[in-house]
Length: 320
Image 1: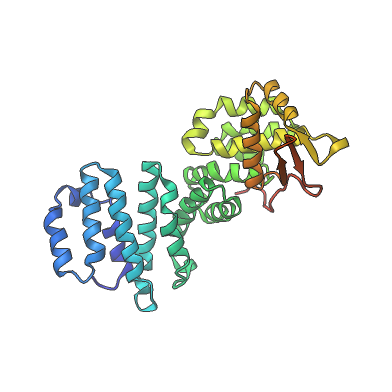
Image 2: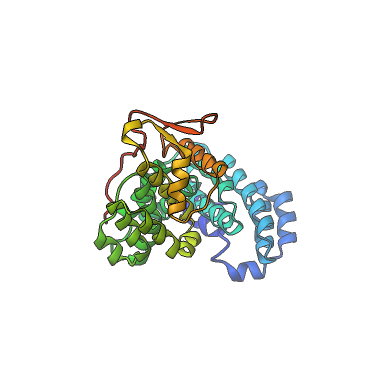
């Protein structure tokens, strides 16, 4: 295996090699890798992954590819083998794509963490297109993890460095960056939604500007399928619930809120939830730092922080 990361990268991808995969004698290559190859711990599970992919078994594909990826990280983690790090971004991308198709995106966090903590390369030295791709997909992973500061950083980086003439890619980035920005209190400009055909966010933004809870509910219901397909519906739903609680705050009892008040507001919005469900929601919002305070279970009261009970993280306006 020659020390050339550019040549190595294509050998590690499943999607661009259909002819190779169809003609693959995987069993023979696996045996040869285990017996003769210096990098058998990498290549043997890689060939198993390709074989499973050819057979349509994504679970085994992911399992074998993850094993190859971990062996790859162990083998090429020192300075002498830093030439292989360019190929490592291909490994990270493949792991993420497989995990998404399996609905198990959370499983690829350990591989991503290993790459980002390796610290044996300068990220800025990689080709711009690879950096944008990497930051876009890992940014999406942070959205699913609801790690909004990290998602904001990575998706904003991808947007800033994306080819300004590639409107399709910009739209893909904005589909995830906008709900992140909304969650940290930053509203996108109307022209941005129009230019990149992100009409599903138009009424969401208008509702937040006006403080119109019913319009917000309608906007989420109208485009629920689209938000679910892109994986941002739960992010927007938590934003909505946080906003509902914020609107019910009684100025005379600024740091206390009875759950029954929240239940009434939800019923007014035709969201039928019982006391236990609302208690669970409040606990989740507090845990996610969308509401600052604690829950008094015995008295069924959310005790809000007297300072900044609805924190907004620092962010910059969505702009391209």
